[in-house]
Length: 90
Image 1 (tube, helix red, strand yellow):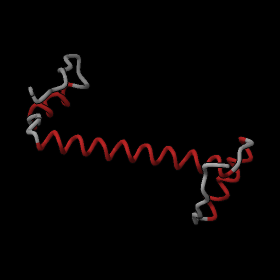
Image 2 (tube, one colour):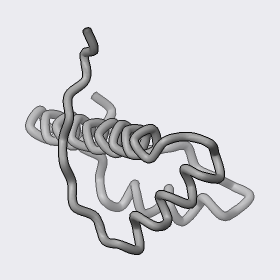
Image 3 (cartoon, rainbow, N blue to C red):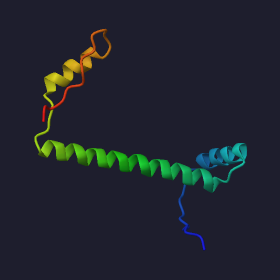
Image 4 (cartoon, one colour):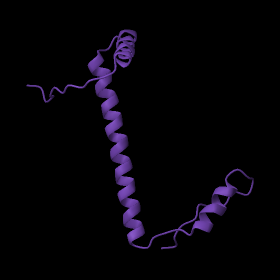
């Protein structure tokens, strides 16, 4: 027995047509491409949420980098004398 479930989504007609063309061009089903897109989206959003939580936890611990230090580092990125990425020193 399959471990998959059916969901229903409504998409714009133009997007469905693009999905159909992609499916035809790759000899894959619309479902294959929809699943791949949803997996990528969910992974990216989960990564972002985790990164935000880690940042909030670091800030709550006082593990911060001075604004001035970040500004100097960013300004150095395009030049020959690139500064090391600043850290909080903790």
